[in-house]
Length: 94
Image 1: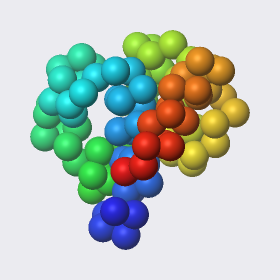
Image 2: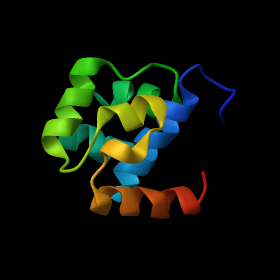
Image 3: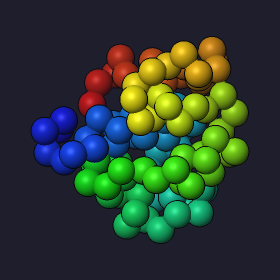
């Protein structure tokens, strides 16, 4: 998937975040965060980069979330608990 779209790695991390939050579908996650489903789909596939305002929304809604991880893959800003749940999703693969 990484080569399909310019922000595919970010999209993968967004999917792991959604799954770590125990939200099974992108549609349900979009409803939870108040985004259009079409935008969520473009973010998860990596077709579009998640903008700052959307990342700040996630930061306000999800305890322990750090936008730097979403954009760059650096986990240091994530809370221990969220990092653990995300790493479980990573281990399951794409």
